[in-house]
Amino acid sequence: MHLTTDPNNLVLAGEIMDWGNTKVGEIRKLLFGAASVMAIAAVLTAWWRTKSWVGTLVAFLLAALVLWGIANMTVLKDKVGSEIDAGAVTVVQVADTSSARSAGGLLS
Image 1: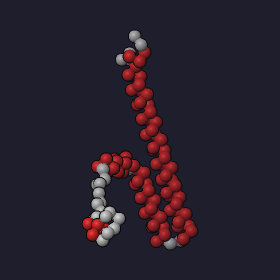
Image 2: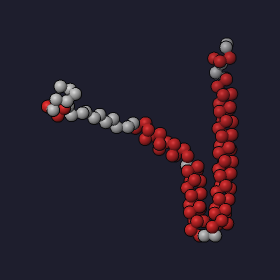
Image 3: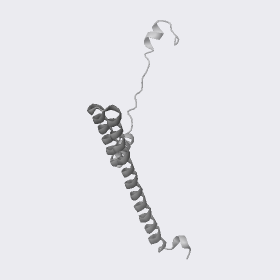
Image 4: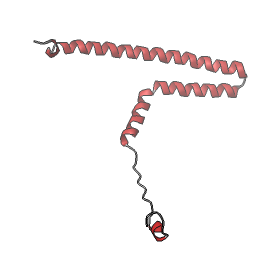
């Protein structure tokens, strides 16, 4: 029997997929942790530079928005994908040729 038609090879492919999915999840957690540290550093830098609660609050809200976007990337991707799949409305504009004919325009 050929190796590619052997049904026992599917188990090995499943294990590789599980390993890959686990690594992707670990990398996402690592990147989210790094983004969190960078967000904290950005807020502290905003406070250090401005010594203003308003500037610090704006930096905090922006950092929270970025972290929320990173944490909910799959939700945002699915929402945008569903809107793209819904398709755009096709608009066809037809020029009014009656006034061009009566005035001796291009179409006469």
